[in-house]
Length: 267
Image (cartoon, rainbow, N blue to C red; front, side, top):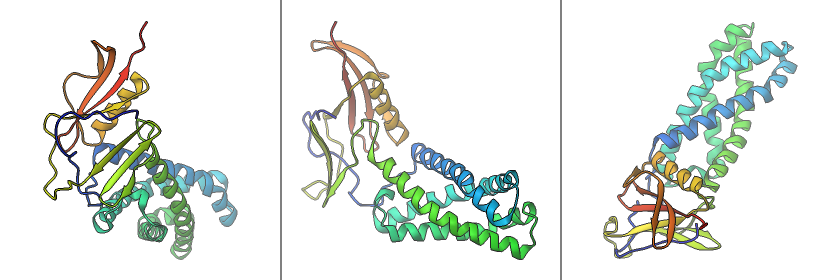
């Protein structure tokens, strides 16, 4: 992000900073789904040897059991994390990346304990153990996965929030404002200082300088995936007095007009 272009107009429209304005868009849902699939796959590969050592099962039997358990667990995990994200945003007015460790431990413990009744029949049927033994195994797995889940989703949420399509670090909150800073520019979202409701600027466009046409496309795709809508022409090269520009335009969820720009080198 090298610059921000403002035309006439007043304050940038935004949802109240810190309010429960998290929108469960296709992009957010897809991100959580990818996280969950990675979580279950890594869990199978990491925990299968431990399960084999404790139960004495063959490795392929351990992998098969954990894979079947993970199918059930993945559906529950994705649903639970989505609901927890929404509730935490509403109750605590924060994003997942800002969640304190004590709340993350609670999230992991609740997720895994509530999963036990769902995975117990699978372990009982495939593990060759009676119901009591299967319950003990399920509780032990829940404890291991709670620790693993705490670490995995902590790292995943931090990485997910750190870099966006423009390669800009996550924003920093300062009272009623959020600032995104780079060595060459600053972008800020704030509540209107006059106390009136936020509205889209009339006649204003907010611009982001990109480093390539591919980055413009990635910025445009990320905006559409997270609630924006394409406007004007699709991303393409336009020629003007300042040379060739690769441009893409969006309307954000509040109606602000924003654009990504890459200056095509001359020659």
